[in-house]
Image (cartoon, rainbow, N blue to C red):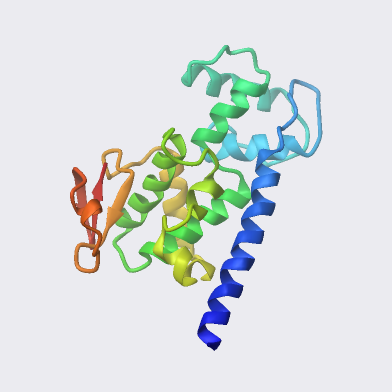
Length: 215
């Protein structure tokens, strides 16, 4: 009875946190341009920094360095290189990058799901999360991908609450920056423990450590 109560409380808290996070992520950031400042500027700079476009300290001011980084990102991702972080630029950034809270969550899921795996295997788990974020088949926020019901065992059994180490953060950054040793996988499983026949029938793209990666 006590275990059942703990499980109910855990998922109730998880659901509450997910709801709050979803509302925060659903809020549309401001359109930003040269000379502006505000709470969305550090988010923009951090996302650009995770992708290697912004090389200096995070501030709340949209100056020439930020504009240059936005233009470089826009050119690489097929957007109009106007240096303005408008809705299309924000949407593309959110599909291909993370902000500080999301980086923490990505490192946490990597650590809780793959802390015993080789480094390549840890990056691979992060890559699956990023691949899902870019796919129309999954939620369009990183929090939504991680918290999707039954998506990750570590979320279901509480290991997601563990504190990630420096290696998990490094793996998370590598995954965000496009290192994908899985070959575009959207799923992974441990063949020694997986009981779902559906997952075993997916097309394998890589085998890394104890995990099979598939599409």
